[in-house]
Amino acid sequence: MRIALVSEHANPLAAVGGVDAGGQNVHVDALAGQLAIAGHAVTVFTRRDEEDAPARMTAPTGYIVEHVPAGPAREIPKDDLLQHMPAFARYLEQRWTEDPVDVVHAHFWMSGLASTRAARRVGVPVLQTFHALGTVKRRHQGTADTSPTERIGFERRLCRQVDHVIATCSDEISELLALGLPASHATVIPCGVDTSMFRPGPQPGIGTGGDRLLYVGRVVERKGVGNVVEALGSLPGVALDIAGGPPLDRLDEDEEIARLRRIASRAGVLDRVRFLGAVSRTEVPALMRAADVVVDVPWYEPFGIVPVEAMACGRPLVGSAVGGLLDTVVPGVTGELVPPRRPDLLAPVLDELLADPPRRTAYGRAGRVRAVKEYQWSRVAAATERVYAAVLGTRLTQEAAR
Image 1 (cartoon, one colour):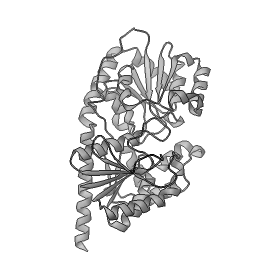
Image 2 (cartoon, rainbow, N blue to C red):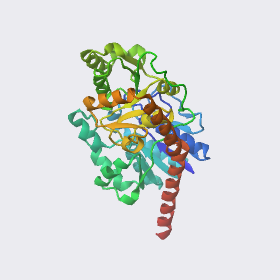
Image 3 (tube, rainbow, N blue to C red):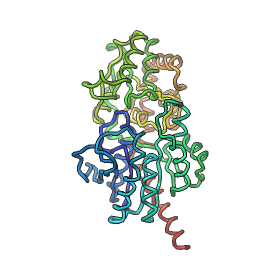
Image 4 (cartoon, rainbow, N blue to C red):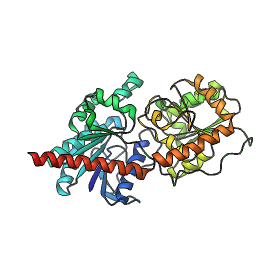
């Protein structure tokens, strides 16, 4: 198949950990790579956000990244990109007219807007993965939500227009149905993990300098990092590493880092919190293996790649009982789940787990088995490929019946 993946703000080759660079970047990179390895011709269309970015480049796994000239060639917050989607769509239409594709898979709602507009003119089916829904974001962030006011309406329209939606977790399905998506047009396919890169290794020694927690990901308020810092106040002697945010030399300029430092100072734990700044993907497995427990307690989460990465590394995970974590984390088997935004409930769960090394070991072993069985990227890509083929088959049948 000739496959176009559209990811307007999340360049699959970008460094992750910034405000707008996280799980979607990883997802698109891994999915495109696995589809290319399977023999498909894959191109990822993403917005050009650097002046010196080449028009086209080949990723290490064999797919093409095409930088779309839509708006100024600089970083722009994703919530400010809507005005540039008409130009993005015009470019896609031109490219797909010149070099036709068989199927389009849009990632994020603005990619869906551009893709459906372009695809109408060239007659190609469009699948959609939202990665996050405006209804959920508005529910949890309220007036702090910086999404365009039109977002929810556009997502509702996409549910009627696209050929199929690939959701990343079961919890998302009910939200999609409420937006008007027919149940027959939805399939749950989770995000995945590279189980050769994320794998068990030497574990921290017991009684060798205190217990260590790890948070990995974007350093934004909704990720619940502040709640972990607050919980640390009830965990004497426990240290927390925070991997994510801007590079080390720019940490002092970041408002969220400053907020977390204030929280840590009030809780009396500033000396036990280490801000690592942005880290490369290759550094993450070693960080996870060095932690006693990986903590991921977002307020809401469409999927959450960190839990499956921690499981693949054989580390226990304490997460919040939201979104994709309800699918990935098996309480009492691979980790524990707690209500979001409740540091008072998070602290005792962490305390009990840190005090029980055999339980942590058992969780880690079970997590590794689950990650290998359920979340390898090759498995995710194969499931996605089957949905593409089914949508193409349906489209051909419909056209033949006309």
